[in-house]
Each structure stands twice: as C-alpha cells, then as structure tokens.
Amino acid sequence: MNALISLVRMWLTRTKRPFYFSNTYEADLNYKHTEKLGLYVHIPFCRSLCAFCPYCKVIYDKELVSQYVEALLQEIEMVGKMQAREQKSKDLKGQNPKGSKAAYDTFAKKKVTSLYFGGGTPALLADDIERIIHKIKEYFVIQEGIGLELHPLDVTVPKLLKLKAAGITKISIGIQSFQTRFLELLGRKEMDYDVMFRALQEVSFETVSMDFIFALPGQTAKMLEKDIETAFSNHANHVALYPFIDFTYTSHSFRKIRNTDKKNLLYEIVAYMEQKGYVRDSIWTFSKDGQANYSSMTRVNFLGFGCSATTLLKNRFKINTFGVEEYIARIKDEKLPTALTLRYTLRQRMVYYLFWSFYSMEVHAEEFEEFFSKSLGRAYGLELFFARIAGLLTKEGQTYRMTTKGSYYYHYFENYYTLSYIDQMWSVMRKDPFPEKLIIK
Image 1 (cartoon, rainbow, N blue to C red):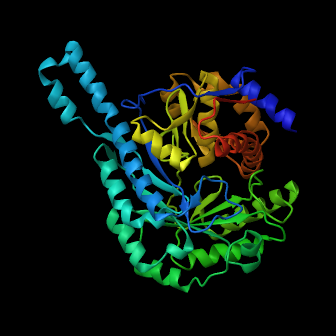
Image 2: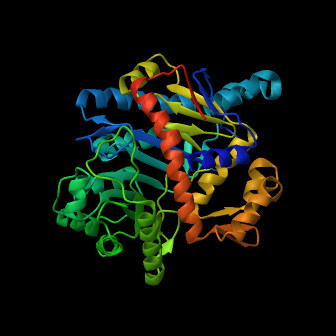
Image 3: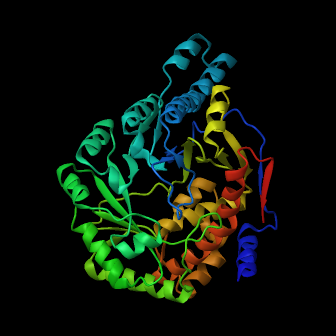
C-alpha cells in the first residue's frame, strides 16, 4: 500500500522529484504581500515529557526559559522589521526618496488571520505571554483571535485570568481522555477535573476546545461519546478527536488497533455527532453550536516563531532548528534560526495547499484560482471527478466537500504522510539541530 501511495504522490505532483530540504541560509522572508497569513509561536517547555507526544519539547528550566523568551522576542522583531526594510529599500531606489526614514519608522503593520501558541506547555510561560503578544502586535494586526494550548493542570482561575488579560481569546485543553485506563496507556496521571471545570465556569473564552485521542486499544464509540458529553457539559464548546499515531521515536506499551476497527470507530463517532446536531468543522474537530473554532493547522500561509516552528509562504517551506540552545545561540548572532528549507515546485505546492485545505473538509475552487492563478478544474479536474464518483467528495457550485468516507481515506493518507515524511524529518532534526540536507522520497 505504501508503494501505491507513493505513486499517487508522484501522479499528483506530476514528478518523481522527491522533497529536497537544504540548509541554504536565507536572511529574509518575503511575506509583505502574502495574503491570509497566520502566525504560530512554539513554546517547548513541559513539566514532564509525555511518551506519546511527538512535538519538540524539553523539561522546564527557569534560566533556559528566560533566555528562550528573550530570543523569541528578538526573532519576532527580526522578522517583523523585514517588511519595513522592504519599504525602505523601495524608497532608497527613488520611489519615495524624501520619505524613506519616515516610511521605515512608521510602516503599516501586516494584517494576519490569527495567532496560535503551541508546545510543549505554553501556559508555563503565562507571565511572559503578554510580552510576546505585545511584541507581535508591534508588527502585526491579528484579525481572528489568539489561541493557546493548555495542560489540564494549568486550567485554574488565576492562570486563565492572566491569559485572558494578555489577549488570549481561544484555549485548547489537552485532555486526551477522561478515563483512567486510557490515561494510563498514554502515561498520563489521573487528576481531579473539578478544579478545571470550576475555573472554566468562572473565566469564559470565545472558544474552549478539548482534545482527545481515539483509536486506542479497547476504546469504543460509547466511551468516546462519554468523553465528548463530559466536555460539552463542562463549558467546552469545541472538541478535537485525534487518532493515535505511532511515531518511531515515541514510546508506548500497547499495540495499535486495526485499520478496519479505526474506520468503524470513526464512522460511529461522526454518526453520533450528526445525530446530536454538532457541527463538523474539520477532519477531527466538532463544534457544539457551529460558532466556535480552533485550528492552528488550516492556514494557507503562516510565519512560525520559536524552535521547531515552521514557516509556509508561496513557494517556500522553512523549519526552525529543534535545538533550544542552538535556537538561542543563532538568534544572539542575529540570524534566523532556519535549519532546513524546501523550495516547492508549483505542483508540490498545489498538493500541499489541497491537502491542508481539505483538512477543513472543503476546498473552494475560486480561492485555489486566486492563490495559484490557475483553474482547479484544469489542474486536477480528472482527479476530483473520480473522487466524486468514488463517493469521497461532493460538489456544490464551486465548493468541493469531503464525505465521511472521504475523511477516512484522508486520515489514511495523513497517517502515511505523517509516518513517512514528518516522522523522518523530525527524527533527523531531533538529533541534528542543523542538518546538511534532508531528502524525502
């Protein structure tokens, strides 16, 4: 099956060319005229390291945190000033010679869709979040709110009040499961959730999302339904159900469930959500009322700040170093902490665009054409036609929507992509902060 998926990738990108990441250093990020730009900030610090979690993370250390925050603020300033430098460069070339200094000092802030803090455990830096947001707002105007991930232990009234005062409008709580047996499988300790529920009752946010992991051994739809209703009955208005993915460098003591069992579980949960009137707003997320949303993933373009953060622009995909100390040292040298850069072919970028657009369950043909200046029908009309014949997609006007059947196969491809691409990439970068190159076939 892996060979078949590789053939599908080559067919969609119209090339046998692999994804080639190089360590070629570029001092600038050309994002001034990039539309629908999102922002992401990575906070790698945790109280303890969960064995199942694949993300870049280290144990909390007060001195290291202090150095990291200063480096993070400096990186934001370096990137933020790039649009001002671009304006100054144009002025000095004669377009506005008299106003070059004024243009440099009073440049227009870049409008961005949203800002998300991920980790790690960002709330461990609650005292610094306001400083980070303030620095970002010196260069960017955030239009759709600010989200932050929380460990259940951090959901207390004092911490929520502090985060809300800093400007956080959306929170996502990594519950994983309310049931002891599954927490034990994941290496999580059982906790008293009453403190968390009382805090959520006292301090409100635009979105309160709770994350759960499904497709664990012995897990049934009824068990997941119980978790979902516990969340919605205790001040959550949004839930995310992520399938367990077996990264090679994470550890656990159980076997994965069969793909057929995972498929059946997904179908049962989707049917349950539809029956209850909950609104599906992405492959893995559901809103209680159709209004709340939380997604740091479905951005057309984005700038990433912090170690391991990624940046996606029109034809570039850049990854910051995974090494926290190396990240700090690079910033002190006044250099971007980019470790690897991928230069997309047009077709590779199209496939990446469609892959993450379909994460939100739909793709709009007019938006595709606006982004690429090419018709979606001309680029992938045949593939979309057969996807509709197979029952994976429906079409209404210029919008293609994924069916439940389509979402299962999307998950299958996502699982392969994660294990074949992200797993390989992160495995290398966890060991080498600045690899010479990375070739993913």
